[in-house]
Image (cartoon, rainbow, N blue to C red; front, side, top):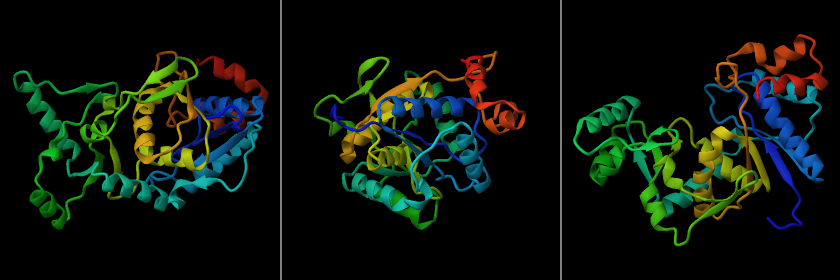
Length: 290
């Protein structure tokens, strides 16, 4: 990003439930940062999960954010209306021979991990988000793959991390506002799923494509997505996409250390505003969970 580039931030919730205080905190950080720097704040609706996303939640998102005093340009980008963009990205990765079909169920993966953990000197690989996919379907022959597809066995598309890394000639870096220049280590997450039969894209793929197309310069999001940024930097390189500046803010948690969740109705913005809390009082309430 050049110094003269206009600052553009975004808040990209999924309409799979009502927003909570943590969402309000993140949205306000993005909005305030854009305004402070004479930039623009964008709202995006990440609704690729058609099984969980509902129109009633999307309407609630708009109501909650307007109540917070936030505004954004129209029309709002809805991911469900732009699957072609994600398919183009998948096609490019496929042409680079970086995708492979994975037919594993969670049961298959669990069984493989249990068996490998019993074998000598072969413990399952661990990443920052848990056990890394053990690469079961990488071992399939082309004949086996064709047979499974012909039989209609559901499958996902995974990025072949080993193959992708072999194409990287120089180290990749990204900038975090809090911690400075970061050397990307995409292998931390292993062979990530980029699409499924029922969902023609994934969060990881769609978010980097959208951020590029919407010219997002600064991504301000929760600390829980810090390691995803390592992987996103790889996708940006492979697909020739722009790399924004990142800032990972702390998560709001309850007194026992649990992250706020949509299922906890007591801290949803909808519940808070219906109970008579004023927007000006929200910052003090957020501080109780930081």
